Length: 348
Image (cartoon, rainbow, N blue to C red):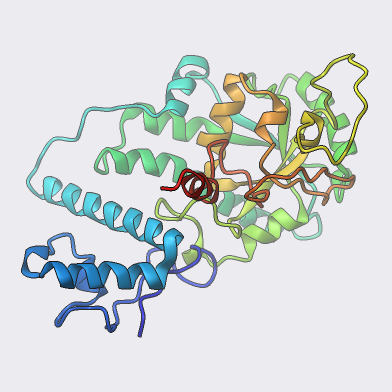
């Protein structure tokens, strides 16, 4: 039986399960298996160079480039956790606190009050029990961003991390009249919401979030044991998500220039702009919020590589990219698929 790698941490397996098979295969040397290969204390010096090459080539053939990359990351993380556990058992002091970028930005701009996004409810007005469960799960998934920081400090949660975790929130706007609302309706309502005194200061962004029927389903369709964790992989298409709705339905970065508009021109920035798109819940506090709060990136650049969502009505441009548009917005950095293509073009 060949080793297998799970495609995602979705509903088909528990997120803390071993993602590779430890069954034997023809390329394993005698007495070897995936369990031994991935053991942090493994000793490869007992193998000949021929045996090592056969094992590496076999894994490459079975897993492919993407699988090998994910396997390497998995083994590296397993090694880090093993080393951290040893240090904890030895009573070593926690490492010096090094704030990630999003917590540096939080400390600089919003250390004394709630921070996050305004979010609209457009679903489940006929089932309050399910809505309560949805919000509980979303809150749990949002913790992943902070749990990652704790793991990076060998399980120690520094005061700043705990404070930021406690004060991050989604400011929910719930009104039965919003049931099934379009993006156009939500944008009008957002303008009103930002003027209200009870809207937390610092959430006056050029976008807001939305719990649409599809977004709600993406969260509730998972078992509790299958919700995202710090071990969940990036760039998976089946992650639970919310919709991001840009405050402007369309933008023209060319200003008043009278350039003829071609909706099929991949180089026209107007075709990069997706006024509604999906964002994984787990990266909202760090990747999304940090970028939005710094406000240095043009909206067209922000949404260039992601598919737009038409769930709230309207149409979306589908600009061409060599790697294809991502189902969900994970970050503006190149995806693994894009990096692989660049390596191929460079002959690496």
